[in-house]
Image (cartoon, rainbow, N blue to C red):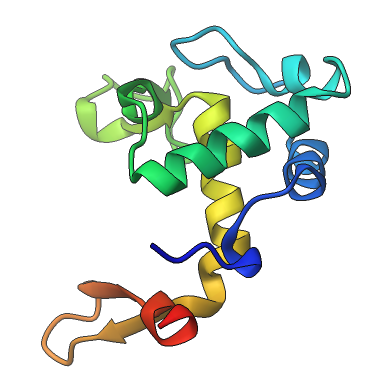
Length: 138
């Protein structure tokens, strides 16, 4: 297994990601908001970085990180007074756990240099993500 310092998560990275998170967003199914992380004890980024590194070392993400709920929101160009509303007048917004968002941003920060995006010529929306860590660590 490769454990390069460039692909592990440290407390400074986690802290900077938490600091950049927007306040006032809805809580995930776990009830935790960005405000909880921003105003908690200073040891939390250290604990989360250890947790994220253990998850990375064991190739395991807790099932709760993938759980979310979808909220229907009225599209900007629609008015509730203009006509009868249909399903097409709404868009869905998924609310994910805030800890999974921190983990996702940690991965994007550390692994973006190692990901290769290959766009197929037949369908531009079909993007293949290939990790390039073996070249770095092997």
